[in-house]
Length: 300
Image (cartoon, rainbow, N blue to C red):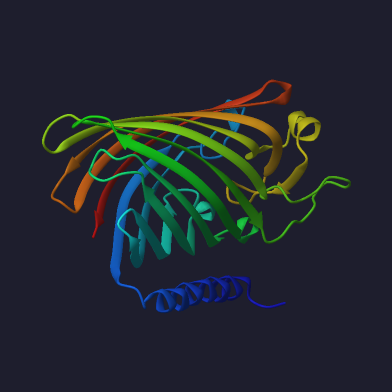
């Protein structure tokens, strides 16, 4: 068998080559360059998404992301973008959860009118090849999203949307006879609503609520809930030799987000956000997680 990391890198680079080819094709029209970068730190108090307090583990991580590509304006109300995307996360304790992703995103935005107060809608699609320090989690992330919004006043922006996402794991090694080992492949549907409010010249506050329906993967030590309610089980060495990942279908997750952003200039900002996620599944399975994130964002 070949090197799985090299195979992932090769497939991701092939995807970026396709992005470059499309950019050259579209380059016959006037195109502007795009670039954005983000770096920060976050803490997740239930990284394992465990139910039992004895199995809950938290960790702090550094993360960084960059996107580069092109913007095309085929009309005065339409904008198309095509970017190559790179993302990395490094955890301080559970190094097996550290990851890198290489992929591409395409989007089309339509404004239904002229001026800053015109409503808009955007459809986007993305694909990324993801690999972890513990390669049992390696796979492809794909999704399609639709969102829209409107500035309803000088201070208030509202937006909402939905998406369909899939993560397909590369491998599935069964550890329990008769039960699938494909615990990391998941499908999900998402809906969200968000409000951004300008508090002052440089300060913006924001809040959002989101719902997700579909598969979830949690990691815990072996227990009766794993066998009774899951449809896939796999060893999860990212958290320890005695941890197992299990997939549950038909779960509902509600997430609540609040934060603030301070503009350093026209192209950069410092952001602080706190989110709380609550997941419910059949059999009375419930777990919660809180994430605190601080980041610096730059774009042009």
